[in-house]
Length: 225
Length: 130
Image 1 (cartoon, chains in turn blue, yellow):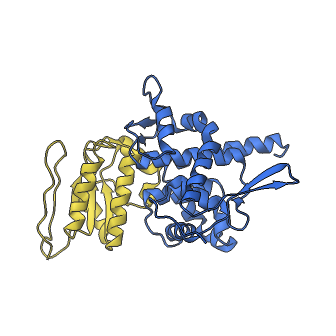
Image 2 (spheres, helix red, strand yellow):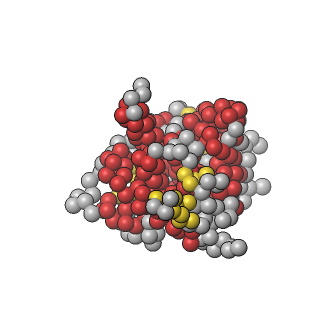
Image 3 (tube, one colour):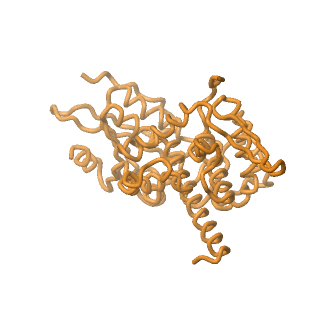
């Protein structure tokens, strides 16, 4: 059995992916791909904000420092954002839309890094010798247990969240992940607190709004109202 | 007994006041926020606030009367200070916020986590005492 490798603290994106993975199946919980893409970009924007490369106010998201962070997932996104001829501020929703096509590739890179940390393993299989499926079973669940404990402390015990945990809570709430972490009774009791913490970050608010719009569009396309 | 305060680096960063115990009653210490609290000024603010905490301050009021621009980075710094104070059974509150900073604070529901007092610092003291 392999052991987890010593690694830098996990990013919001990596922790979000750990929460979104169903341990038993080694696959993401049932979340629309576009929702996952949106949350992935939101996570990257949050990680860049915590590294003081981006900042935002009520109107816009703006680049405050173009210096690379040294993170191979975050730096290409920062570079793309900094490539604009003029570093003109745009609303958060603008960047979510602009970068959403990168969501899957960024997610894959982050999953690969979790594999290299010895937290997940990659398991490629063929169904009927033709259709490929990829699973990421958990090798060591210590990280995901720690993440869940921290988040539960914030939503069940009224701990003041760190900015990192506040942002992670917002993403988890946008993607409906708390129903996989809490029992129905716990979820009902904790919902006011979850909604409060999820509102505390403007990127989180923008992701939630975008996800709601995506889900409404999917429902409309599927013929539901 | 509270150790003597280490005064922060002066310069462009605005003045702050440290109020020690007066007449045997613990009064919250007040830290004046700069005119902008964003990625350019947040390090100085964090340093000053942590100096207060390291010096044993448990109740801190941030005075926003000079603050006219607040970003997410500034809010994150306040949250970090509030968390540090919670870990020592202390409290943080903010007073005299107005305009854009107040809108930002409320839009992010920070007033539900860090008490926001609209008028003078003594009202913040009452809030903390409650």
